[in-house]
Amino acid sequence: MIINDKVFGTLYHECGWTNYTTINFFGNEPKIDLIVEGDEDGLFDQEQYDAYTAFMQKWEDLQKSLLQPILAYYKQKRHELGYDIEPNEDYPLIETTDEILEMINLDGIIVPYGDIFEGRDIGLSFHCTWDDENGLGVRLLDEKVVEVGYQDVVI
Image 1: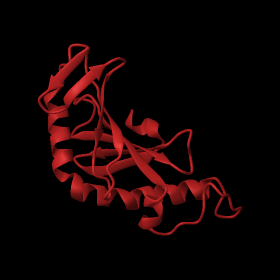
Image 2: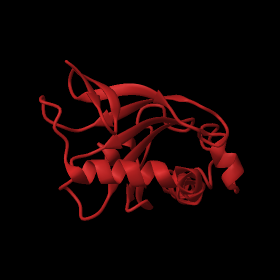
Image 3: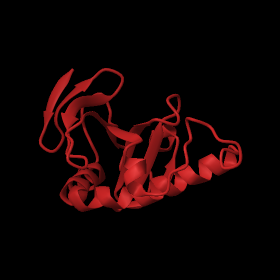
Image 4: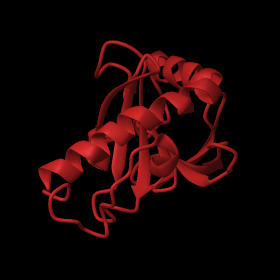
């Protein structure tokens, strides 16, 4: 089934509502998945529209706020795995947000059901060089980073 939504645009329903789109991410325009949770009829919550609209309006400034929490997560993971003591080529020592930016690629925006959390909820999924299997997920609530972890934190 295909719908043309007033906010999300053209969406295709297979296992959920999806489409490919592009978004500016630090000067690049990656092709990403837009995933919107909803029933088979294509009816979405007002909270989903509000979350996505606010996210897109603030995206230019918002993307800058992602890098420090991602860097902190990376450093924590590296420490937990012992790679701060025993070097590992998949987890090199990095210190700056510019370095972490070189290690991630945005690959999805997830708009969950609107009644799960209090506030505007959006998830971002990334491919990351240090963990091909689990990737990287960032959950935003009211356009602020509230959780960074494996991609499943946004699903």
